[in-house]
Length: 231
Image (cartoon, rainbow, N blue to C red; front, side):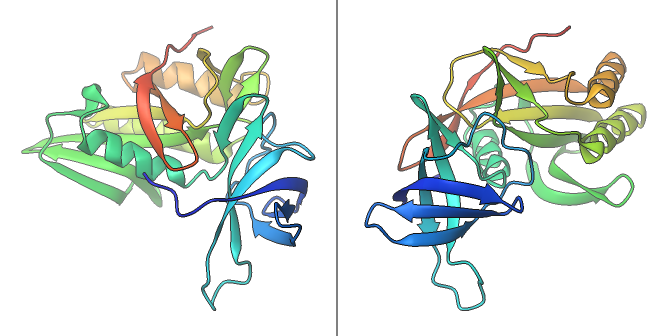
């Protein structure tokens, strides 16, 4: 996925979850929309380099959107909505080998209890339900999920389990949106319930895939499979 033209700046502060004050390279001070409801621990800090996109849409209250940050030497895509887009591209171009062989790909399909599955893959009578989560958290030397308690995430795990019990294939796909080279684990110390539910549904047949993105200032693409450490 190619980024719209990115504009560089430095973070002043993030607040009210969805707002960030930023000083652009030309000295202009702006407030940008932050498309990320999580804690953003380890992927944003005062004075860190950031990149935003500009949207000249009269219906938008905020013209700028925060897209990338840089912590140390690593780029991080903080826009969680990107994960679904690049995952779909990676299925369609064959990068995610485990999700090949289907004749139909439908995003955002209704299922479960008032939910929408991120990707529904179909072939004749076969169905594969794929839930996607964006990963931006780093704890010590491991990448991890979630970065905050997520009852919604736990609900999604249970709905994937239900699909398996109905005879379908169900996959939990974690898309790492930062460039650190590290293995992946669940952040059980942040959300014990999510970690417990994860183990339960995996034991019942829900599959798990973890893939990392390649990120630069022009594009972001799912690239490599990453090892998950189970505890």
